[in-house]
Image (cartoon, rainbow, N blue to C red):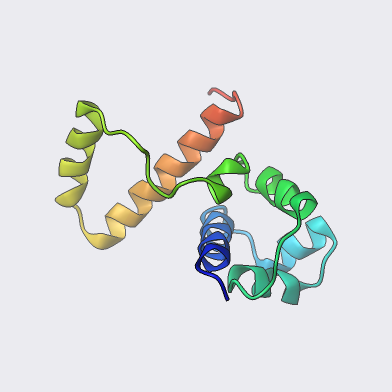
Length: 114
């Protein structure tokens, strides 16, 4: 199993869990068996471009969130300040902050504003 496929699976699982969706709900939405979602998230099954596009739509994120670099290439002073503030949080709170930041990023990428 490749590291890239495993990373993609992790990102897909985190996006699904953040929205509170079950593997079964996602599988029904894209018309695949639930086991296919499980294998995708475990990095044991390849995902084709059409499936990835459907998953990105369900998870309200651009495809690049799942295929692009894990961290931004540049850091601004504001990002550095956020990192210092986040370092003071508990692991659980940092994980929640990360999920919220990913949600905001995906919403901005799709052009949706409150």
